[in-house]
Image (cartoon, rainbow over all chains, first blue to last red; front, side):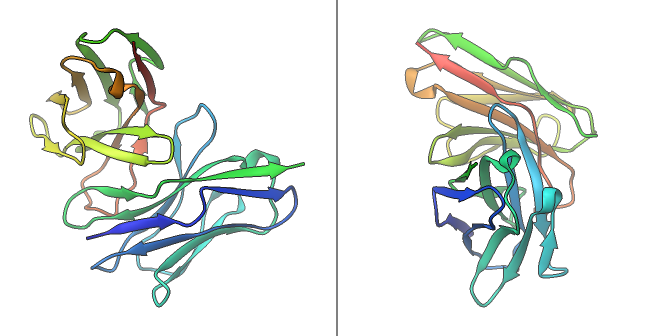
Length: 113
Length: 114
């Protein structure tokens, strides 16, 4: 069965410094993986998705994630944090046996001025 | 742009009331989903539907039912609301390309049951 673990419930970085949000997954298949972002009082928005093409996936707002099969990881990174990046981020794996997505518990990203 | 709308942003109901949450999508998507979101638990799937009049239970269907009479509309029903159903409810839709397809979300309904 598929599962996903976000290793940090909160991450705090200073504006202008790199961001790393960690995600590990478990899947019997070659998975599809997603990162979604939820800004305060706003809906969920897709940041990026991996579907077995290039292992380095670029998303919106300067974020990218690298699929590492040997480590079963799909960490989200950004070179330089901006105040507008403060939000909750969800790592998600797709279950091919149905149309469902399996969600991580979320990581709150806090940006210090 | 895909648009998923939900009937209310905020809703306050009393214990025992019947509650209807409506969701409408405008992209002719086959699949529609209802989740609830609680702090520290991520999103948990309540029900989903892959076609009109079809429904499948998700991870936490107890206390809920759904209705999909038209392709664009998916309703979540709380037959008798209880305080432990106080939560954020999110609706999503996706096209029928299999599990890899992106889900598009509505803004959510924050339901409080007193």
